[in-house]
Image (cartoon, rainbow, N blue to C red; front, side):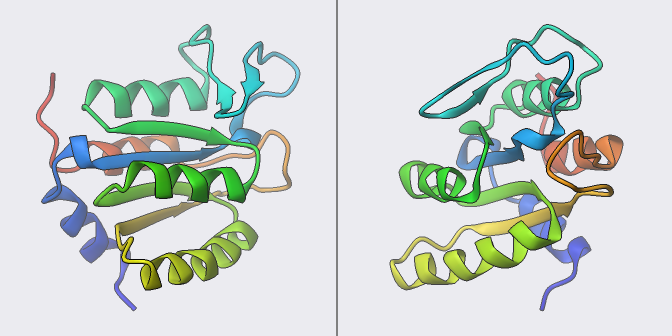
Length: 148
């Protein structure tokens, strides 16, 4: 299995317009987040510049990513991948979700959807107010991107 460095190196060679970012909705601060859900996941309001979801979403958009999905569950994220047909996926998830989604990704591989997948695991999971190394995630998102 490829290590994280080789995956990030591969990511850096893929144009951001062919990448998507998948975020778990559990990164939001449950007590203060005003974002609303719709059929495409959590729609970040962009209201708090310190919010992890806002920071990561804004970075991906500013680098020209094809799309960002803040999913309340893995099925929505998988549907987003199928819909967008990206060459690369940067995904933040808990270890349980990672295992389940990797199984689904293998099924997608049989359907000729084979994006490079870079997974950034959560540092603290638990389905509410989770934590990721935001600075490391921002570096990975920006890998190979020219500043806009």
